[in-house]
Image (cartoon, rainbow, N blue to C red):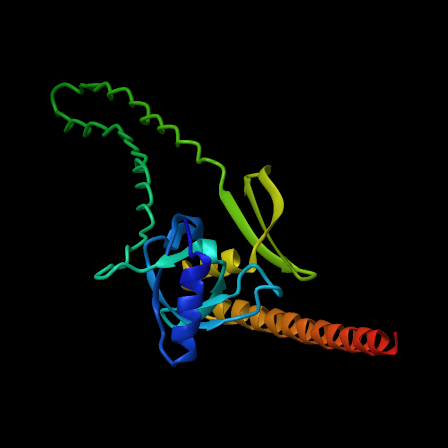
Length: 225
């Protein structure tokens, strides 16, 4: 599944004519599968596996041909919704009951016979025991990091590592950042990707120039022979 050679050539001709053909993301694209975007550029396949630049919302990101297919007529974007968070367990409030004995009033003295009446005070009741609080579960931490030109993803629950840092593609990192609406984070990731793209383009231009020089040298040697 994905764009074949004939479809890519058709798209290249449409982009060259100033059009923006629609494509649909396949299951290989991950959580945005079913969404529809527009092809705005076809880069050099030799420079990267992700050379089909697609406008998706306000972003323009590179994808591989396997992540895309020609959008059928009337195709609607399939929304990706995150599952609702589980409800937090209700925390019972502790109740305290303290009964204080009330002393009996002293009897009025009599002139004829002095009597003292003792009134036994009720025994105090013990305070209600405090219910035990439920033990909270260990927190889950997912870390997306960028260092030395590589994106890594790791996960831990409390002090236990669930997944050691492993390398992911820049496009996958961008997709994850798009799901989190945090001001400044998406702009920082886009800046990193733009810098990497510029460096890769410069390296590709350098290699093309070196290849052209070598081919010219071979042509001169062939004429000399």
